[in-house]
Image (cartoon, rainbow, N blue to C red; front, side):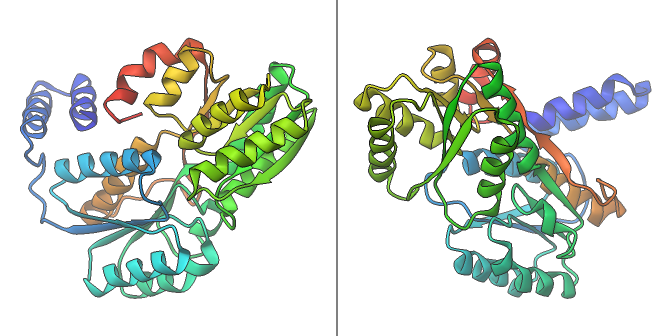
Length: 324
């Protein structure tokens, strides 16, 4: 659907000939056919996602849609252990892929293998995590949000809601992006904010840890989770603890949209994961085809966008189909 929309928008400003070709490309994409006749290159995406992470499902969906449009053989793999993720990147290098997309949640573990890819002549685009390291590691560009800026937006929104004491729940220790989010929120938040580290691979433990904190400190009036699946755990913990804290979260999915609509959640910070996947594949294709590069040495930002109850109705249908 995203590919169809893109070519239809492009057609609006074209000549009659260009518009006709754009319409043909839209029809081809809608039928599941490539909209270009470039070689069938192979691109690999390797992320730090754990199993069942709805955020990365959306990233993958965007990448697959762009790959279909661009006649790309798309390979996706993931592992939330940094050393295993690095090994998956090495596997992609050994396959001599034509392009590589990688997240840098734990950049120190990824530096050497990304350098190997660059040395092998494989163009690299980084997504989601690692905006500060992307250029240093030799990537063409980074697509995602600036995590510090996103955190600062959270602090500002908490101020707007007159919150005084907040809990920032980090579900993946060692993830530099998560640390940056909480640090950014602390920077702009006028109240006090405390970090709570939990084991994101064990959801009952996440719920129990938040519940214990809310029971022991009734003055906490906001809980900020760093991923959509953990917002629901925080809601459950709030109910069990008898807390009045507002639950807010990073990222958006269908359950978060419903939570916003029903006031179970206060706000969400969206970084448009579909766009991250789609643009990463599209930019690699543009580089292979025409040596195009976006960003001018700076990250290409897809967020942050603060989503409230007022926005949720307009986005609900998109979250249900798994593209927001």
